[in-house]
Length: 116
Image (cartoon, rainbow, N blue to C red):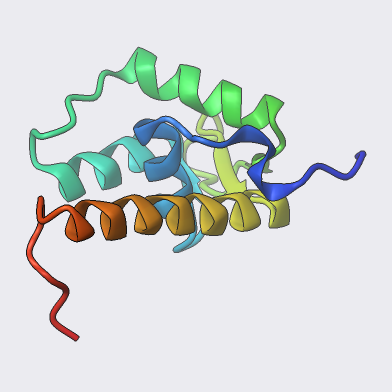
């Protein structure tokens, strides 16, 4: 795999970023990823199965995630995914990029000051 800077695919789509966030907790199959994203957004980010699987295909192509194999012997059709080191670095770079945007919004008084 040729070296790619972590910011080479930025900005990530909101769905792609959420998939990477979900996979930071461990390997998941596609439907479990969908459930994790929906649980976090409770209707604010409508997500359809086709959208999720297109995002997974894109993340696989960009080598931000990889297939982890079938962990569940009860259903070998399930494909599990895991975040790669490049995916983790990219998620970190995207989080920094978003934090910079939030800082700019606070500087323009669009958001309240941070409570640290």
